[in-house]
Amino acid sequence: MIRKVYSSYDDFKTQNDLLGTNLPFSSDVGILNQPINVANKTAYNRLACQAMEGCDGTADGRPDTLTKRRYDRFAKGGAGIIWYEATAVMNEGRANPRQLYINDSTLDDFKRQVADIKETAIKTNGYEPLIIMQATHSGRYSKPNGVPAPLIAYNNPIFEKGNPIPTDRIVSDDYLDRVGEALVKGAILAEKAGFDGVDIKCCHRYLNSELLSAYNRDGRYGGSLENRTRLLRESVKGAIEGCSKDFIVSTRLNVYDGFPYPYGFGVKTDGSLDFDHTEPEWLIKQLYDYGMRIINITMGNPYFNPHVNRPFALGGYTAEEHPLEGVKRVLEGTVRLKAQIPDMAIISSALSYLGVAAPNVAAAYIKNNGFDFAGFGRTIFAYPDFAKDIMAKGKLDKNKICICCSKCTEIMRAGSTPGCVIRDKDVYAPIYKEFCGGK
Image (cartoon, rainbow, N blue to C red):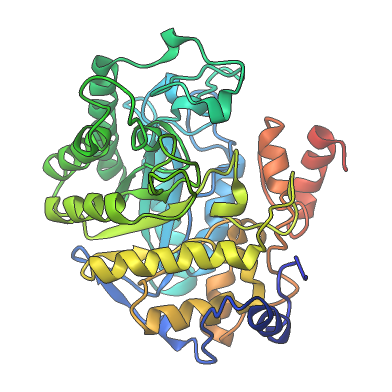
């Protein structure tokens, strides 16, 4: 079976038919160029840059040279939404020593960057993108000084195996209260910085996401569904109440972890890995009732089972399923949730593996009200002007697409600043060679 990104429609269609994945395909992608209103604001097209962290801020969390270069490229690229990367709200919750960190001292730097993004976009494209800042606490993956310093919701033998994290690293309920306060303050600072909205990050097993599966945790943040979702729900409510009515409050939400119960959210309790939409659906309805009007859906864990959330062609292991089956799980799971909460605007994930067929598949889903925006993650490192090409030419250039080789991930795992080694090689090939040995 072909396990490479599709550089032709025929390759995609052949594999799609052979596997019986039956992903829809539309020859007309014009719907991706249509504007849509979101929470009193306008997104000028249905294409979104997902939050892709560059790990290239300053030591105190300000945007640095490569950060500014990356967002200048995104601004020129024409996407209707730029989902700004993971930005810490507490120093100990930074995922790396150069993760962005919004606070009173760094606020003016974020103001300047947001203004630069909008000015560049207007000059280049004639419109501003909506810019949503992702507010985060990295929890299990915290590494503020370059060495692991995990802060966990509970011990998880799937990750820790025979080497459990010391129990004194399990955060208390009082600490989680403070995290919630920091996330709300981060939202307020994001609005002051000029962002159009904030994402209270709840995905990929970072702290908020890990709590969703804290079935066996005691106290106010564990056990019942209400408790496990408390940090997300109360942070969202606090952000909505603390910011202006036109400020977007959203979340990038893991609706399925891909780990068996009781260590995974969105899975059946029978020990299988089947997606169970019951709890995610309840949670999204709660968030809608609070006033949330757009949500960003994802699945899996890029550190542990990346074939689930960003089906790759090459990586550290070979998954038993074909990548198209992983793509289908994410997209069809998103469709199921959209059907239950039709008034919530939804951004999809897991499109990069589809290569040149990605706009066509996304357009088919959007035409059928399966979701509202096509979100592209690792694609934007390789192809920051993907949206402009889709809108102007109705297609992607096969010589510019992300090939899902995972070299950007290798750089990040090696502790450096990730980017596309293949398409942006003048900047990132030397970094890859230095930190990853040029393999």
